[in-house]
Image 1 (cartoon, helix red, strand yellow):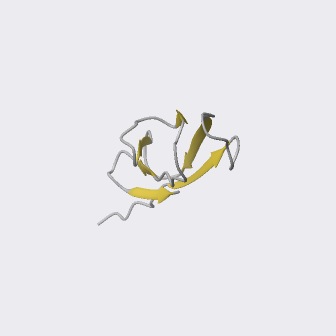
Image 2 (cartoon, one colour; image 1 turned 60 degrees about the vertical axis):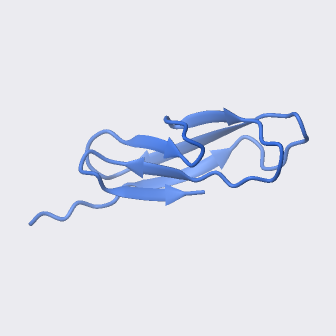
Length: 75
């Protein structure tokens, strides 16, 4: 049996606080795991980067998955 390490992931935003009507860019960076990493955000968006324009205080969570199906999350 081979145990694969889980990938690591870290989310950053270009700003932590925005005004109503403003947008913010969220970026997830992953490392480790096996093979290419895929990213899926709690709002259904795929990919490492997304631009969001929330109308209220919101927490976004990203799940990173490697080629073996090992996952990790950050918010």
